[in-house]
Length: 621
Ligand code: ADP
Ligand code: MG
Ligand code: ZN
Image 1: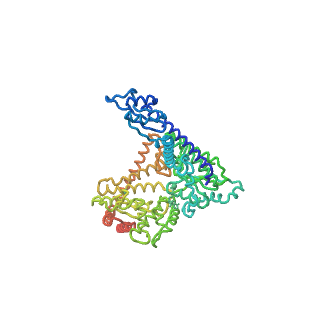
Image 2: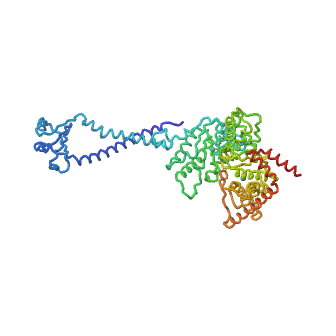
Image 3: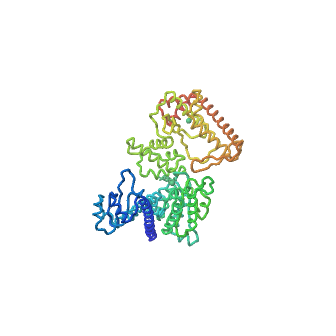
């Protein structure tokens, strides 16, 4: 690390400035004190003092080395003598051998305090001691201040100095083998690794190393992991900071931190600088609401540093974010982050690969079918899968087994998706019945339509995330496209839970709120985003913001059109609702049968469900 002379010189300078400050402080205090005391004690001549002694007006005399402190007797009527205000006087010492006799003769008390009141003592107490005290207090204050700002190790004034070196990791211990299912991203980053290994090969042909690569993708897909793996593969120092590390209360701290970071990086090239969650500093500057000076300065510093260094030296900047759209355009232009590496949620193959990585240290029993697990985790990111594997292992331990089996995995998936079983929530018989019919309604609608996913499990055990029952469906294979028919059937399936309540009990309950929400947003997407309605043809009416996070919808059309969209959405919902009711009316008998089974057993597997269904159907034929 470049901890050369400079910080030391800084320290001496700081020390000096503090001593000077302390002395000035003390002088001010001393002058102030002097002004205070002079109001109470007044200097008088020796003759005046002798006169006071003669008149027996002196109460005490304190003898110091160079002076006498004289206090006057209080007069009986409470009034003070000739000098109205002060009743303490200072008299310059005169070499008078008879003084003691005179004092005794006047009846005054005499003290002498020669030792304590020496000149040196006075100098110490009024000058040196306060200076030292002030120095100590100020130093401590500055220390804690500096520590709060993250500059702990340096001298009191070195804010923002040497912070990056804390984050410099020699070994991340992660390689590409630990990152599964991100082949495209790995390929893209591999080139950077290769460049760091043998820059000559690239320089010879005239190819320049990309200055930076931005990892973009939803949370938990392994962006941070990938960056670490790049460092592990390249075997170079890895400077890792999170965007929020730069953002401080004080304007200029972040910028100085960026400067320090790059200074260190260039000295230690080749190396990798990784800025995680870069959106914390890289947010677009033209955001009118509440501009943030500190962040802007930090960003400007980052931009100029990225322009400033020579990439042939071998410094690569990696950034990671899940909000690429808020980043400042200047940051994204070629020459800064030249490359954008998309880290998507894994597909079926990817999920299987991630599972393989994470089960490496887990003991599996023979019945485990990781392909089925991968199929059931559609939509999960890498972090979710890591979590599922761990939950499964924990469950196996809880149940006293020494190996993880398939049921552990299936339960773990359910825990991640729907929450833990909540056995202590007691439903009344009536509620249990309604929940059972509701769930079987979903399941039957799925089974009776063509393009739907098979039922994996139905349960009416309440879960901690709020559901009272749960119908689990598993795709037979991963799909990347959805047709209009499939979407309509899925909406029908979602609405069939409520439809069952209506058909059987002729009533409605609050249990369908989540179904309704999902069905409605699906129908809205059909109309506004996918061009699946006749009325609006292929007109785009909504777009999605924050694609990699929650994905909030933004309206792109007039207020009036919006109202028409609502009408169109309602039309789809109505049709699907009616279809669901029709399906259940046509299958009322089997609905009763499966519901009775479910109420008794609380959980039905997909196979049991299909058995009852087929038995029924075959009997009818
Ligand atoms: P991000 O930075 O994209 O939000 P992380 O890199 O922090 O996500 O991933 C969190 C954890 O999830 C990792 O530590 C790892 O255990 C697991 N994980 C995520 N993606 C993968 C992957 N592709 N392969 C293996 N493990 C992964
Ligand atoms: Mg991360
Ligand atoms: Zn439902």
